[in-house]
Length: 98
Image (cartoon, rainbow, N blue to C red; front, side, top):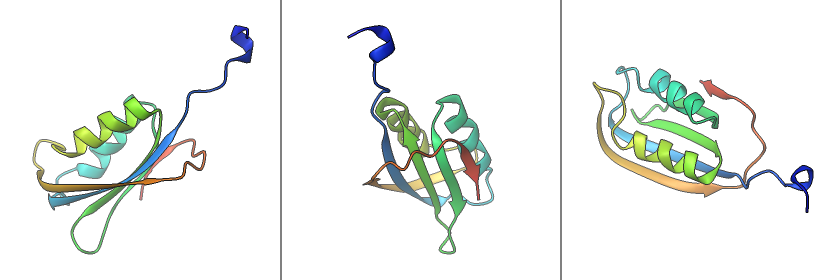
C-alpha cells in the first residue's frame, strides 16, 4: 500500500445532551468554536426543556475531546449531567449553531 492508497480515518458520530445552566451562557457559540478547533462537524442547539443538544461527527479522539469539553462548558455554564449516544456517521462537513 502506498501513501496515495491510505483510506481516510474512521469517523464517529455522537449525540450529546447537556443539562444544567447551559442556555443563555454562550454554550452554543463556545461549542461551535471548540468543534471547529477540533475539525469536527455537526451541530448544536437549545432544546425546549432547557438542555443543549450537540451532534459531533469526526475522528474518535476529537469527538471524545468535545464530549469532555461539554462536561465543563464555557465559563458561566453549570453542567449537571451529560448523556451520550452513538449514531451512524452521515458524512457531515461543517458545524452549525441551530
